[in-house]
Length: 277
Image (cartoon, rainbow, N blue to C red; front, side):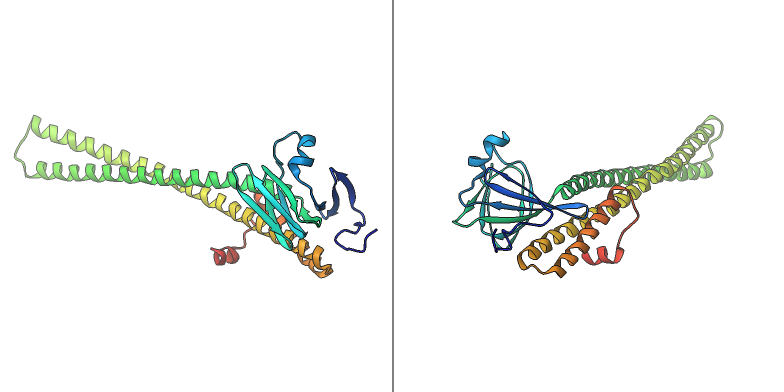
């Protein structure tokens, strides 16, 4: 039993030890909070690689390092180092080890919700780009039809002027009348096609606006979860219970906007998003 609050047993938590690493998992509402204690000398590639079966750790870690120092190295050579107290965001595909002679204590929020949010948000962003491109292309097509319609109308005006001022009769006059009728038919066809094209373009724009609303929802969800993670880490470090309540508020905000994005709820704080943009 230790008197150090960062290392002391957590009431109600499930505890297991893997390769010398102690992992305590506790429920927090609909989420899970983990305390991971890495002993001095721990290195993932040395102590965990053979157990997991991958060359690198393929899990994301999001949370707060409350004690110690950890060093991260990715496959492309990128290096990160986190020193307590500091918010931690580690991407999959890394090797990591403890630096120094004291254990590293990481307080992490289960990143599953954030990972799903990011995947969905990425898909929404791609769909937004596609809808915007289709809207631009369709409006360009609309403009092309307008140009053709204007040329046809100008041709009709010229032919009617020729007909009115010309003394020709018989077959020549009939030929002019046929051309006038043909161009008038083109003008009417272009007018109808433009109406259909305009409807398509407005539909793509409406789809973009609809997707943009959900993109904002996932952005707010990600922000809520991120602030909650940071506050949970500070709570673990300072042991101030009121911070836990504040963290819970941001956790609820993140979960609410995540659900709104997934289930197409029309929940959108316009004033906040206008200020942020």
